Length: 276
View 1: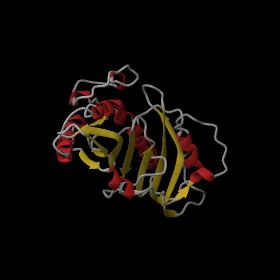
View 2: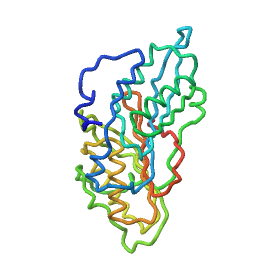
View 3: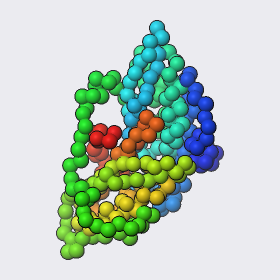
View 4: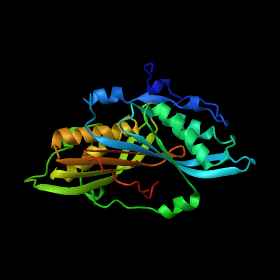
């Protein structure tokens, strides 16, 4: 693949919406550049995946009647490419006026196209609205650092806030925050989310964790890149025995993105949060 950057993507540009199937709309972006920046070379230091949920997904059956579904797409973190979100939306919209025999056919088409763009197998799950509604809304099980009474005055990346608590003992705990905000690296539009940090190791300084999360507020990176940065910073600075970092971003353009990176092969099941 020729070297491409976010500036080559449809982001921030006027785009005509295509309403008939067109897989060429997908715009893959290599993960390598950002991973090189983080010192990730060779074998990945984590396991993980990116789960995308599409809330605006429709096509026509063979009689021309619209079908409405919710799509769930799982991209492995080992895939060499992520897929730029606006191109993903444009691709999904290209199904709007296309006719298909049944849901299974649509699923097969999407798996083929998305796997080709990502450079690795992508799984596609298409949920009817009744099934999706039964999943309900989940809450994070852990300690919310948002209620800590701290002064925050740094809104640019600063991993120096990460440190162990005084007289830190080895613990297993989950910390989370709903205060994550980062920005699109091309348009500057805000991306809002909840970040979950689960680890076993010397106890983290919770105020430092909160300040670190707030320091992403003006950071311009894609969702997946923010999570990988958090994972690398926590692992290098605090050296936990086990670590998982997961972000549940709020939907934008009908899509929400949920990256998770973990030192363990077993990953948590997806559960929709209240803002999703």
